[in-house]
Image (cartoon, rainbow, N blue to C red; front, side, top):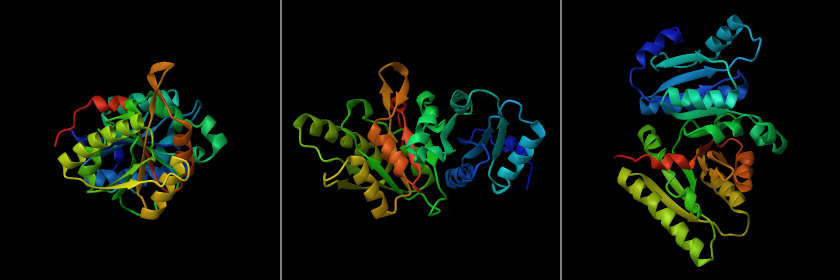
Length: 281
């Protein structure tokens, strides 16, 4: 296999997918998903390692070589070692490299106690780049069924800048999952957000199907049940602006629960600030 550092010269102006690594099995799963995305979308890969204090350079370079050895030779690849605080460094590098997605492998997000200490769930608070959390090996080598819950919260309307990128990679079926809502005001917001999403999907010529949950359980539980039913390849979660910090984001408890229980379904987390970017056909 070619030296990954030499292959960085082939990247040109290609969009890139950022894959941070701590050399854990979950990071291997994340790299597998990133390769799937990059191969189908004519994107490059950027692998990032943030060394711990006192970590030897030579050992890290060998681990990076081992980590990237399964990346296809014809896929442009850049490898970075950047010291710093994990969450802030990943968010900064994602912007510097103009990443379309950050793909993160994480074991902690599947555990309620682990979530409290999870660097993964801190990273999204800083970022403006959509990121995908991978916890287990991919059960299917595809990204064709995307479950997209539609919310009735005003602040989340239009979080769709990531959709054209996925449509460029694949021709996915978007499963639009709607909560059970009875209040007229909330129903109006829900229909408005649905209309916004459908407008973009139809502009892109994307396939979609609507599913209204029965409303017999919490929304996150019904979303996860639907994911299993359709063998979803990804489920989407939209964060909320943090009222304490206008430049930070937060996840509601039901969204954290969805991530915790997602299992082998990768979770795409999108921050509201991305809605400002217009999407072109």
